[in-house]
Image (cartoon, rainbow, N blue to C red; front, side, top):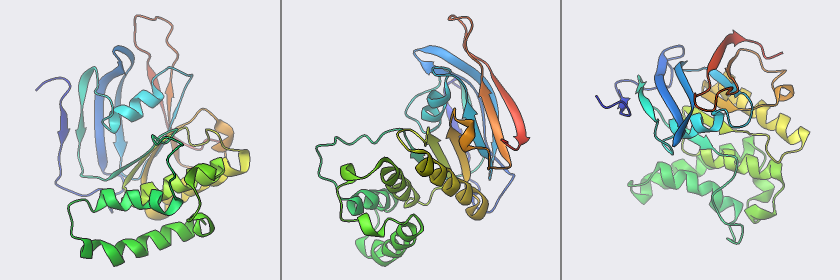
Length: 244
């Protein structure tokens, strides 16, 4: 098998199989040149925090997992089928676009039901959106322009759009970027709730430990800084522990 091949085994669903292996990765990642090499095993229901200095490969790892980048070497084996929801640091939509929050969130359901009949979408999706919007307290801003929102409101709208695809796996890149402290804490609390109450597997890139101090049962993936520019960085699995 080619070293960059991605294997997918769709025999079982992620949902309801806590502690089962979700994927195993053994690869080297980077943009043209390697920045990190790792062997990594993630289980259903894990909450991982990826930490380390800028440029060590944290965001590169997330982008490789969602398929935006290909590994430079090695492979990943998925043991379960899954829906992945990716929350990047910024939205790839130009600010000149007049985009209502309601329409922005609906983009998620359009992705979920692509190829299905209109009748199969309507009631089911409307109910899903109502529940998500109420949970994230977005009811009062649905008619506003997305770009007129505060950083915290934008982040919650992005999360709402992502939840519309009913993800089993959430991949979040620097969730506190551009947020004030209360908004960042609120966002992390919602990720924690999704993990504990809904059983979602969560992978978060973060370098701000003070937002993690009240979250228990995290697994920490520490990326070491590269000392040799010709060699990829290493990582250390700190294991299951509290981030306090």
